[in-house]
Image 1: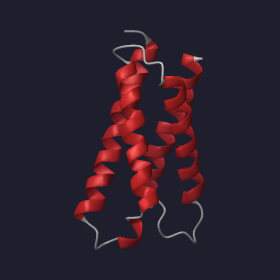
Image 2: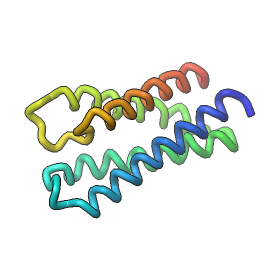
Image 3: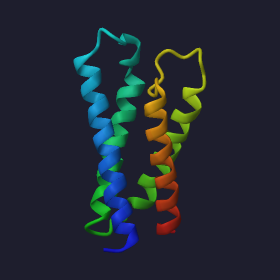
Length: 118
């Protein structure tokens, strides 16, 4: 395995895993943070799962859509970083420092993967 395949596998698994766990959290705990369960946040998680699968499959077979998936995920993760620091928005997807740290790690990994595939 080369570095692109290893990074694709790790990033894809982390992105899909986090999105699925957050989605389950939205379903199981709707009473604790009802403002968090918005259509925008659900769509963001579905984008993560869809494009995360493309990145994950890139580890096993070269995917032509990787050049679309990585920039889209970079944009959505950058938006979450900026959204976190807007204190007035209650429905932001990242609502604590642990999610911010994981999002930052994924963002750095996505930027590195983009540099590798270019």
